[in-house]
Length: 343
Image: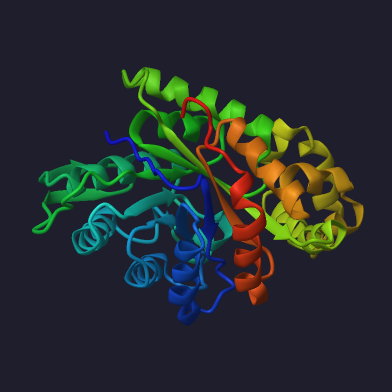
């Protein structure tokens, strides 16, 4: 297994799925120029494609690492996914970080692709994508996917680090066992990151991988303004939307709000986000979102890094002013961030 690393800033940029695809090259070039350490391209169904989006980002930049996070294990056969990733690697060697997850359950259900066992689907996908990228011929009869003497004609030329985008304890254990890194959802707090590290370490121990550095990259909803109160208010609506999307998960349970949030969600009827927006305490925004003035934002990013994340990928909540946010962050936030000690 490979150990993904970056020598640049531990702060990255997530290009929002709300951004129009044709804007990806410009935003990517700006992020690299302004000193962000990594770039992440989502694949949120049904906005824009993560693989084609990553190609656009890579073509507009020269050195920055570009993560794809995450593609659903159920949206493509693992052999087709491995073929796409190997193609990108051969065109841009060593610059792509593939992230694989189940995906938002509602979206997977819309495609009629929800597996009986998400855990099994993830194991079969990650392990066989790894084998194919490495040039192996794969014959495998699984519970979700089958492979009959499949081998890539053009395998990857570098050891691509595979990230798993997962949340719960069993999946994090699996990430430690079979993946190279973990990609953490928005709304992760510092306590969750410490808990995640423990679960990943358990999986590493099962695979005899103790001592290997397992990289963790964390997405963070982000709003910065010299008027800190304005920034937090801007982030609050988006935070409520995401809390309604994951009302019961390790993210919220470890933070200690699972039951309270679930009660709001159930009382919210057809629009739980609206009720959550009205009732959620301000402290939730303080703890689960990177929002405020530049100094506040720098402190919150640093707290996530110190809690166990190797990098934090900022997801601006205002898709219509990404350039402004990137430039302000580069001037007044990035210089204040240091790498995690011992990472």
